[in-house]
Length: 509
Image 1: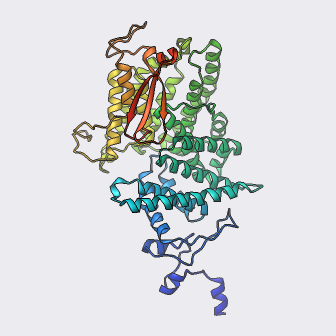
Image 2: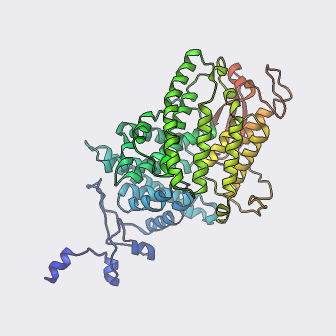
């Protein structure tokens, strides 16, 4: 009887059995061993999606990487809407799916080796890079094995997209933006092919599906907008996904932002598709598409009023992100595109000047909240960063765009060095870092004194269409420092080479 009870009972790891410690059966390693910093030799795991894969028996280096992933990676990568993803959902997946386990270790190794504050020796950095590359390769092999299946389960699809999420982040750590954007585009293609958004209404997979959609919808667009990346990919419309999601009430701020970002990405993509010299037919297509998305935006506003009323004391960063995106999107629907006939540029945004000021004040106010500052720093999230970057790029109001760029510099510097603060909570001394948008503003404003266009540039107030930066070309993506070529509308029109600049901060800025 005793033997039968033991056979039917829990399977203990060798380590916990020897120490008479109850095994928690976490996979692929016993969590009690991880927390104690010991090698776990008995708890092995074969992923549900990879029944033929070799069991995982973590090595000492893997346990160290896993510890770094849990204590560091899941903290620094958190934004206003994905706390649950990084603190609960993703750690659970690393313990239950082999490709995700390897992908998490690869990302941890890449982030650890590039952490200047860790004080690592050259030999340690080399070992971390080598182990990170091995883990990345193991994860890719696991995902490739999944793709050979004749029929993919929902679990398989979720695993592939989650792995792609981590592969993209892995590529970004090395500044490989070509791979990053390619992974992003392929993942969004799969989401459309699988109608992945339908899982948002699944009782068991809703949270993970929502967070993956949130990541892939925003990330590629944010990188492109931050560096004015030139892409040959066709614009992406999320019209079908929005229609499906709007069949039910909004139940969270994350869901509200997801729909709003889908709308922004869709209509911004339409604008990006406009040729430099649009015809009446081109503008007609834009106006027809805008009408469709405006109907969805109106429904979103009605549903958002309900969810915002139920959360009167929401997270300030979440509220600021949603509100800033809402204001900018609403301004798109008020643009008079007839003004752009014959020359595509940002003239159409001039009427949105008050909206830009409003967004800046929303973000500035949220960043100065006492509850935000009590954590020891200004809480800059990617969504807020992107909105400020957009204002600094598009606005012709010299003072406003300089203020937005200044706030971006403070946000960038805040992530590296802590300096004394003034009464408003921001640093007293001006950071020396210069971002890409600073160089763009400087170039555009350098034409004030020599402009002979009609209408011409007006110092301090106006930059003519010809002297607006239209394209940014990147030489050797991932190189440090990064070398850019800025092309104005005049450069593009006249076939001129543009101006080369050297950027010593990360390319995504």
